[in-house]
Length: 375
Ligand code: EPU
View 1 (cartoon, rainbow, N blue to C red):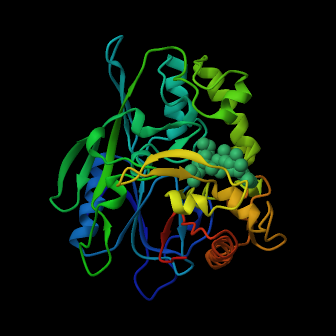
View 2 (cartoon, rainbow, N blue to C red; view 1 turned 135 degrees about the horizontal axis):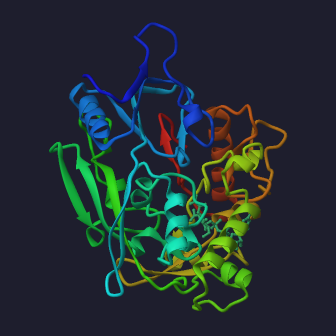
View 3 (cartoon, protein in one colour; view 1 turned 90 degrees about the vertical axis):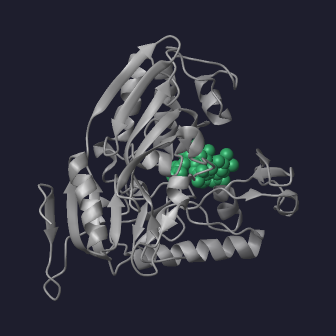
């Protein structure tokens, strides 16, 4: 395969291949066999189809902020999605602003641009690390918004047919931290299933309100000094969300590089969604938020994994002075204090999940993608 994308690798038997750890916010994980940095869509498509044709396992990395890679590394091709380009399709009072961004664009830069132009619907998703292409896969959400509310279409590469396929948002089966882009997997070679679709770009339909979408998160409304449901200038929402995130060690920019609380993959566990029985068995005082209805119309309740973790005896900073510890600012973030290996983080994650199961009767599951390892 020839490609203009930059490629590094090692012949088998020689020294270790290119490092994956620096590409991730947890900064752990062994080497890749080969690393391709895809800066254009053609390079991305060629790298993916090339790896598939060669029968090579493939790992796509965007911002690397939701990834825990095993110490053994990845015996295959890592493709870093570094495509760029933002296009304004149309902007009118009826349809709003229709904005298409390449998968490799930085998510928060797109949010900042939307806020600056008065396009609303993503302002509460300020300060989230990672790339645009990752957002529809796990339906990124925070402070009462998620991208399912604003995604019009997602253009993908279908690894089964080798062709492009565009999905309307309504066909993406969005749920809490999930979509068909995450769940639809195929075994292209061997037993190991990988994601069928590779995001090429995503198109967002944003309102030309100037003001934010109705504030939908109590903590955010409090911070803004308004009631839930009110609209305020989008820039105020952005500023308030950035301040809230900073307080939780969830802003990952140059200024926070040396704060080990930010060496995390965000929330390490999803918030459990429980049926009536599970909800009734929750410890007294556990947060309960209505979460729609289940398959048989039964009410579902979402609780807080961070609260359960603390209730089970794992307070903020648990694990210190070890190399892997809970963030000192938020119990739901597992962090690398500087010298952790993947094994240290996995051991801590297992200890916390086991403790929560024993002491609270709830199974919590990892939110980041685990590569070459499991809990
Ligand atoms: N809480 C604790 N201890 C803590 C932190 C929180 O007990 O250390 C309890 C409090 O009761 C608090 C509740 O947990 O009211 C919820 O906390 P928070 O608002 O921080 O939200 P979260 O459930 O911890 C979720 C998302 C975050 C998102 C925030 C804000 C998941 C898995 N996580 O966190 O998303 O930023 O809400 O909307 O749904 C991510 O997915 O990586 C992520 C950071």
